[in-house]
Length: 560
Image 1: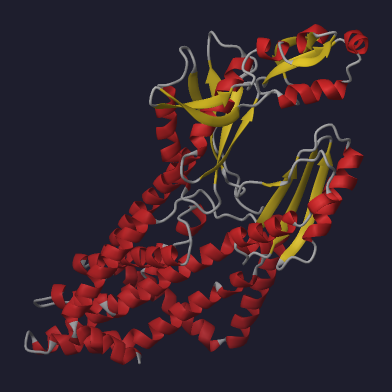
Image 2 (image 1 turned 45 degrees about the horizontal axis):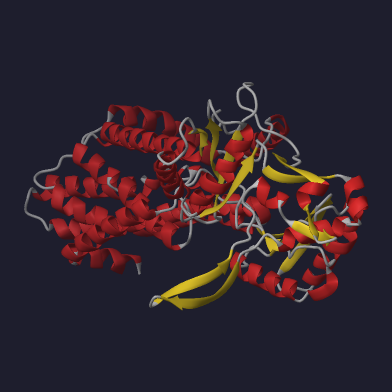
């Protein structure tokens, strides 16, 4: 099978070249369109159900809101766990599903169950809503508002009603959270004595304000051949609008809200605040991306939108970013690029020094980009992202192993044929036989290396999500290097290695071989001592493991 594979590639060299060019083009396209992130997404499939029953104590929220929602979710397909958090005026229920569950399918199931709650929730309780589809790395862009002539309430209003809404329109943005400042509020400060004097209850006051905060649509009339739309304008816009709302009549005289209360523009009650660099309070915004999107592409669109919004802000107001996850992503990509260039250059230098033949070294080095592009294709169509774990998994020393063996064997066979026959020999047959000669050992050795990574696929949960992409990427790159070594490398050797070839003896390798051969003979001649020494070394290495220390992932500095 392997022999036929190599022979086919050598017999159809043009087809092999065309297929290689096709892989290069597809690999470049996959590389440019591959989602880029800092780390693999290790978050589980979860859906949050958020309910905000105002003025309800924690105990009531738990008993009357949280518990009915939890009970309604029981028995959903693929659900693993339900957890909840109840606080004053807030209920958050989190449903966790199996990892292979589509999050939108899970949200649809939950929405169906919530619609069946009916009258199980308190009458004054708002309808539960589903939280955004985000992951543990969704906080990608943070900013604060800076102004010399606007207070915190005005800045919060600008953030809530202008900036936040426009940023949510960016494709890929799941939510924009706001912290700091004060929410503007029209406050009706009731005078209890006046209410009692006019025999008006607090509920009547609240009902009157609610019922008088709306516009009414009518019909239309024809006037001078034109249609005139009839509307009733009643929506509250100013303090005086609230002040003039009629509550009742006493002896034909209307009693308004302003007669029984004071109406002021104030600030809603808040929990917590936000500050920046110890310079006092600020209004901040955090942009969350939707789970599974291309972080770098979304943040670039967010920054374009921020630049567009900045032109329309009131005079003196500016958006100041203080965290941008693309900086981390760019550093990751830059680090990987440096490693690729350095390792590729180092491989070429070492191969040239070892083989003493620059053409052979360059042929072997071609495996590096080919295997990477091949892995990019498979990464794209298997849903992986380019991140520090996946790109850092590629070991170029192992990637070029198969190519080194084949090129060195082809070079030796050509040298011997040139020495024996001069130029009068079948170069194609010599190269084909040299590649076939080491084909099986190469396939078996690469297969063994791949098998070493198979136990990683037994990991589940967070560990599995972290290390599955690493193992897959490395296996993809190894598969690409193996295919290139068995097909592209022999063809390139046929095209490049022309003329008389003489194998040069490398003095460094000769010294290494001279030092190694006595050790090899001694080890083979004393198998019991060799195995005893190896066993003792293995046991001692295991004894050192407790002193190494451990952590789940390396520490990561994301900047200020």
